[in-house]
Amino acid sequence: MGTANKVPGVSGGIVAFVAGFYEEFIYALQKFNRKGFKLLFSGRFSSFYTYVNGRFLSLLFLGMIISYFSVSKALDYLIIRHELYVWSVFFGMIIGSVIYIYNDFKSWNKTTIFSTIIGIILGLSISFLNPATENDNLLFVFFCGIISITGMTLPGFSGSFILILLGNYVLLLVDAVNALFEVGLGISTGDFAVLSDPYTLKMLKILFVFTLGSIVGLVSFSHVLNYVLKHYKSITLAVIMGFISGSLGVVWPWKKTIYKQNHLGELLTDSRGDYIIENYERFIPEFNSTETLYAIVFIFVGVGIVLSLEWYGKRQKKLV
Image (cartoon, rainbow, N blue to C red; front, side, top):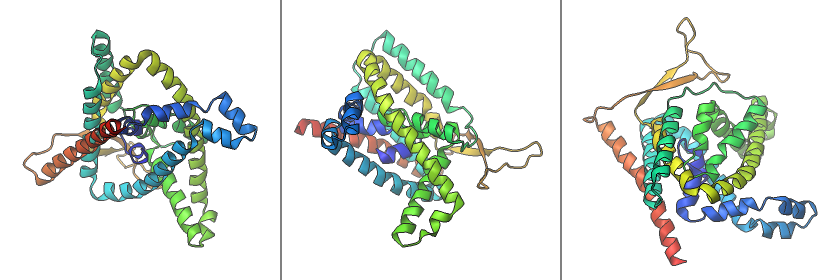
C-alpha cells in the first residue's frame, strides 16, 4: 500500500482490496471514534490498542512506511533514467485495476452504467487539467494531506495523482520524504549538522503538517466511506471504475513535457531552480521502435502485477 500510494495514478486502496484486507482496514479506522478516544485519553492504552485492532494497524503502517521511503529513492532514480518504462508500468497497473474491478462487479443495470459513464467523463476531464503551481503554504499542505490520503481508503482513487494536479507531488512525496530520509541517515551516522540546515527544517515542517492532514483525512473519510458503501455500494464502485478508465490519460507513457514560459519565451523555474511543468503533450508512438516494444512489455508487466495480487487475494480467501 505504501508503494501504491507513492505511485501517481495507482491507489493504495486497490492493493488492500485485492489482497483481501480492505474491509478489516476500514473497520479498524472506524474505531477511532468517541469511544476509542475516550479509552485513549483516560489512559487505558491497552484497551484502546485492542479496540482499534492495534496489532493489525501497526504492522500495516510499518510496512507502508518502509516501502514508502524505499520507493521514494527508487522512483527518483528510475524516473530520471527510464521515464518511459516507469510510466508504462504505471499505465499497465491502472489497466489491471480496471480489469480487476470489472471482473468482480456483478451489479450492471441502467443506473450503474450511467454512473460508470459519469466516472469516465470525470476522469477524462481531470486527465487533461493543467497541474497547478507548487504551493508550500502550510494550510494548503494540510489540505493536500486530507485529499491525498483518500487513495488509501477509496480503491481506484489515486491520492498521488491528485497531488500532481494540486502541484505539490514533488514537494510532498519526493522532496519532503527525501529530507526526512537524509535526516534519519545523518543521525544514524552521528552527523547532526543536517538538523541545522534551513531547507531541511522547512521540509520537515511541511512533512509534519502534511502527515497531520493525512491522519485527519484518513479517520474522517473512513466514516464517510462506510456510509456511502453501505447505502450506494454498486453506484460507488461503478463511478470508481469509470473514473479509473477515464484517468488513464494521466499516466499515458508517451508524452512530451511542456514547461511554463514567460512572455519572452524563457522557461520559468520554481524555488529549487527546477523548470515548472505546465502540462504534457501526448502522442502515439512509432511501433517499429525497440523502445516502444519494451514499453509495451512493461505495460503487460504492470497489468500482471495487479492481476497477480487479485489471484493471491482469492487464493488466501479460499485457504481461510
